[in-house]
Length: 66
Image (cartoon, rainbow, N blue to C red; front, side, top):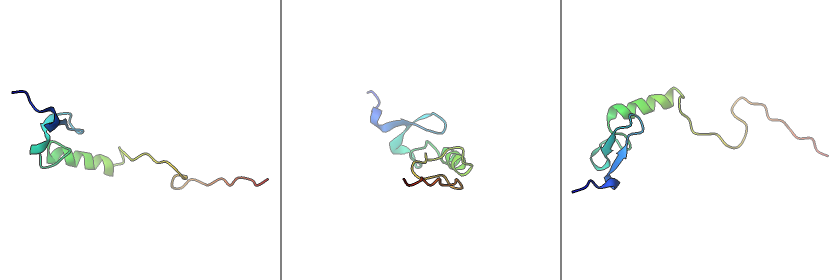
């Protein structure tokens, strides 16, 4: 019988294919990969893109009124 493709996914940390319904740490294949991903966030290797106002610490330029 073929594998159900909806049950399997690829771990974003290590690239291994795993059964999503059997992992205790979705969307990761293991606790180790979950902790590696957390470390990347804490070390600021990965971030959520910023859109909108100026970034923290940047000066805001005021437009001249005419």
